[in-house]
Image (tube, rainbow, N blue to C red; front, side, top):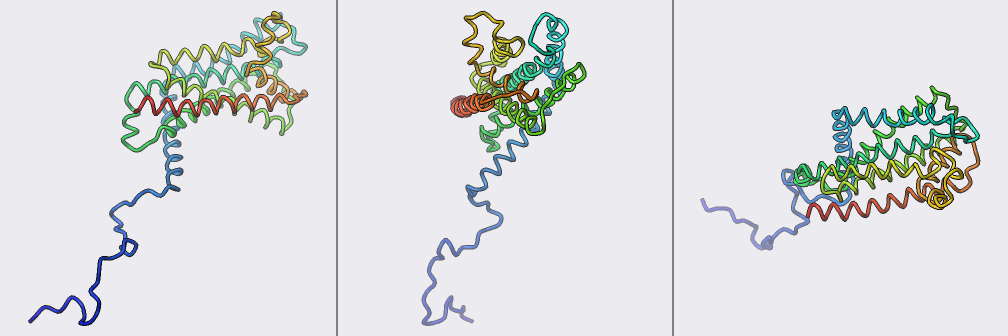
Length: 288
């Protein structure tokens, strides 16, 4: 019996199907839609933030140091030096905002070491083979740093309350103080991540700790600026840490703050913009 014709007589011979008419094969993945890139990056960042927190939890020495050092510094200043420093109020009330900034600086500086260890250990190549971009990797480190800092900040505030710190902030002022502190912690964490990319070794990255720990001292953190030598007033008045500390002190104690909170946020935003741009350039340079 002859084979049936492929088409009816007189009908046009079917040509090749148009690309839009071809049904997609569910087993063959198509190109990723651009709108799916952002959720995927957020998923990677959350996963890597969890990794950073787990790494911090396993590094017991670093966790204990980051939690206890600010508390010990506050106790030293309050009980060793507080009686000799005249601030016009109880010294524990005066010094807590400075200790919070010291705590934030120390906690965020550890991010430089973590990022440098990842760059040196080769884990970045594994992440890139899994199509994980640089932004989620760094965002994971920064998120873990922010979480560590918030825990440390809560501990410092709890100890401060035990030894006599009595804030007078209402809900709005307390929320504003928390926002300013969070902005500073985030900016310092991103800047620390950029330093970790710039450093050639974790040991070199740890040098960033000295800078962020030193910066609160020539400010109003521990003594009024007016008690410092005259040649130091200009730097102490206009360095980035001073408006953050003055904003926290004024908001927590119910004092007038003027435009100082906006200045503190401007400094944090400037550091954040610098760190984001620098970290993007450095990551591409280190991984290319």
